[in-house]
Amino acid sequence: MDETQQDTRQKPQEQVKNEPRETKQEQPAQQPKQKEKYTAEEVNELINKRFDEWSKKRDTEVTEAKKLAEMNESERAEYERDKLQNS
Image (cartoon, rainbow, N blue to C red; front, side, top):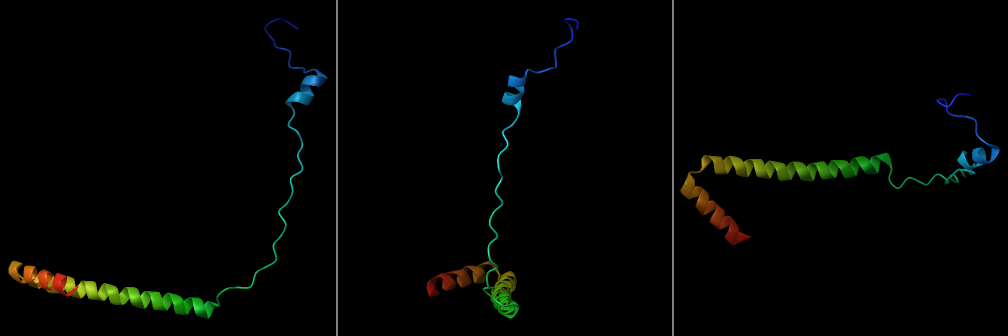
C-alpha cells in the first residue's frame, strides 16, 4: 500500500469502540382504551352552543357598527359617553 492511500482496515479493538452499543428498545406498554368522555351528540351540542353564542355576539357587534356608521361625530361621541356611563 502506498503512502497516499489511507489504511481503511480497523483493528479489532477499534471496531468495538466505534460501533454503537446495541440497546434494547422497550416498546411502550399499550394503554387500555379509555371510555369516551363525550358522545358525538354531546360534542355537537357543545359546538352548536358555542357557535350560537359567538353568532349572537358578532351580530350585536355588526349592528352596533352599522349604528355608529350612520351617526355623525356629535351623535357618536354622545353614544360612546352614554355607553361608558352605563357600564
